[in-house]
Structures are given as structure tokens and as C-alpha cells.
Length: 52
Image (cartoon, rainbow, N blue to C red; front, side, top):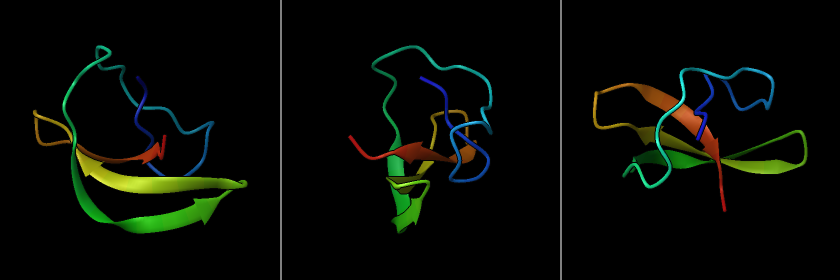
């Protein structure tokens, strides 16, 4: 899984293993026809991921 710095597919950050638990910390936003969620990873990194 690749969280993004911004709600855009080409703005990847480091990869996290599939199944990593992410905490939703913000609302939804739309970008590029995709709904994105603001999340926090276990290591404290805050990012955007596509809603699935």
C-alpha cells in the first residue's frame, strides 16, 4: 500500500505492508475522480489513501 502526501495517485510515499492498520483522522476529499481519506499510519505518518 502506498499512502500519498496529497490526494493524487502520483504522489506516493513509502510503501507499507498490506494489512497495515491506518487510523482515519480526517474527512473525505475528491481528487482525480477518486475519494480520498486522511489517515495516520502506526509510525505517526499522516497521509492520504484512496477510499476502498
